Length: 222
Image 1 (cartoon, rainbow, N blue to C red):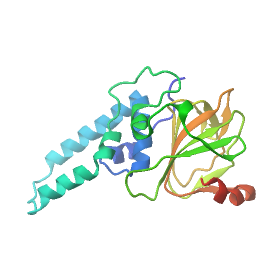
Image 2 (cartoon, rainbow, N blue to C red; image 1 turned 60 degrees about the vertical axis):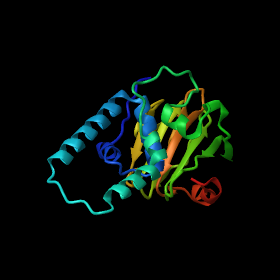
Image 3 (cartoon, rainbow, N blue to C red; image 1 turned 90 degrees about the vertical axis):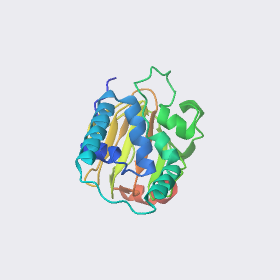
Image 4 (cartoon, one colour; image 1 turned 30 degrees about the vertical axis):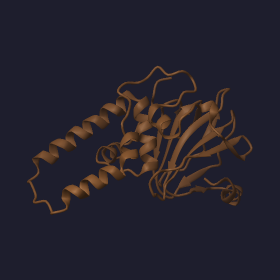
């Protein structure tokens, strides 16, 4: 299945400028490792940013500028490694994790220690190395299961690693990414005979439309 859903241009600019927190950075870098089109767009954005930087008037540096820069580089070592996408799309075996996600959690999809949070739905929380209010996790959703209809109080990115789901925005398969904001409400439903496994970053909890979803939210933790 070819990739049909891509990153928003504003997200690509934020990635190129280093303005994403770790949770969203992991999702974006993982998508870039799977998507030739977005990887090229991110590279173009980085090149444009470099040209704009060289076009700026030079400014005087403070006495501690160099030591401050080194401290920031050392503190962002893990994120710098995550942000480096694969040089080309890999011909990985079914179940293997894309390189940026593999560097973060290691292993294979069939080795993830899932926690059941609802009938037909499992979750695996990914620990971030930096302080962030955003959440980063993976979801396993069984064939035919629909996630309750919901919106978002802020941003949400969902990257499909295997399987597929369909919602109001279309069909999402491996490599597709839903780059959503607070204006979108949807109800993903898994299609096909295999579970859908997704990598998700959110900066606020989901906003469920139905009473049952709102009652269960504290227990399922999404």
